[in-house]
Image (cartoon, rainbow, N blue to C red):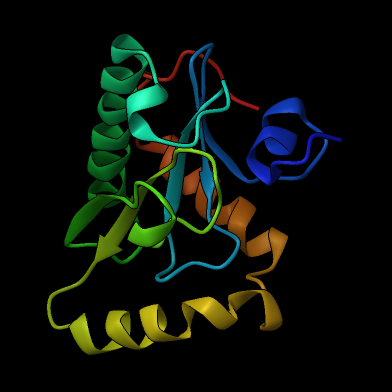
Length: 154
């Protein structure tokens, strides 16, 4: 199994609730979400910093993140708008050393809840992860609203 958990997911050696999969990127639900429907979009090739990702793949990464944001808004996952965020490097709070774009569903007035979740984030591995059945259900709902733009799934 690869040392990087995201590389393990790409290789199929670790489980994930996949929202999007194609030959360049993979998107799946965060097991320790800040909000229900929190998606991570990663390049399939390992890169620690955004600048290490080829420009075409980098552009596609953000195209996929944008499409997922639209799907979140259209679906039943509670979402008025989204944050699309990259923590680029350890000092920027990148907790997994593999480039990943967070697509975070937001609701009007949820800032206190999101800030509380951010403060608890370092403790996430000590807390219970969101269960796989719930993640798989959320992933199916998001996929349903991607309007056939996805090249492949699973």
